[in-house]
Amino acid sequence: MFAGGFAMIFGIYYLRTRQNLAMIEKGMNPKEFANRPAPYKNLKWALLLIGAGVGLFLAYLLDNYALPAQIDKFGHRGDENVPIYFSLIAIGGGLGLFGSYKIEKQWWDENKDKV
Image (tube, rainbow, N blue to C red; front, side, top):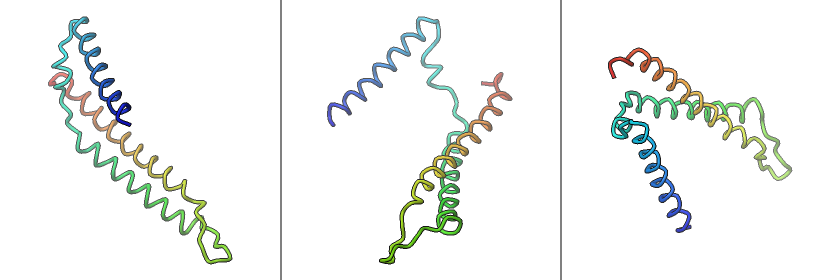
């Protein structure tokens, strides 16, 4: 586990260094790339969490009302609808990130000259 963590940190540092060297070779300034504005960072997180929450809520509604689970002879409820939770959370979060991307791209296209 320690070796895996060390390899991951080393790999990130190594790839970042290679990226900076490649940018210098092409005549770009790596500091300008790192200091690009991120005007909608909080919006991205908000839409991601809202989308995941809506997905979780829809999964709950589907699980309890649209796709009721079978109850066995001992009175236990089955867990065959569990994948719905994971899939709808992922779909909702993805839709939130897509919405954030569209809003940020629209802002970026309008303010290209100012940045």
